[in-house]
Amino acid sequence: MALVSAEPTNPSNGSDSSGGNKSNRYECQKGRDWNTFCQYLRNQHPPLSPSMCNGSHVLEFLHYLDQFGKTKVHNPTCPFFGIPNPPSPCPCPLRQAWGSLDALIGRLRAAYDQQTNGGGNGNPFGDSAVRFYLRDVRDFQSKARGVSYHKKRKRPNRNIAAAPDQPTS
Image (cartoon, rainbow, N blue to C red):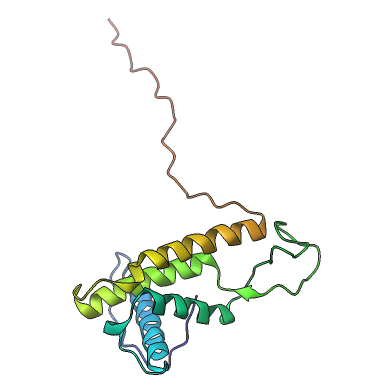
């Protein structure tokens, strides 16, 4: 999810062959997300600083972001609730996708730790209310789309090794 920010970021221009571009992209996105969140806090009445922020402010921010979503989420009363590929349009709202919110919270959590040097009275992006909210969004969106969410797990290699060579006499 790309969040637009009015404040510029200053990404490093150097990249190395070990994936520096991916790191730069992540750092730039993290900076843009942090600037957007800080702008959101400044627009509150009264304005807030990130150090005064708590889990409820993070939840309000996530609700605010829903208005910019691009993922159709069917209401339980919609005839297409639970149908993966609806045959026609419906008036259900567009919302932020769970995966986008989850990634956003991860970047903001890292940015908060970076900005506060890991200090303070706890990271509001790691608050239990935020974790519960993300879990509820994931579960509801998977039901609304008719697609169950399964965490990707690495499968063990099930190749049966050939018997070791027998020494010839």
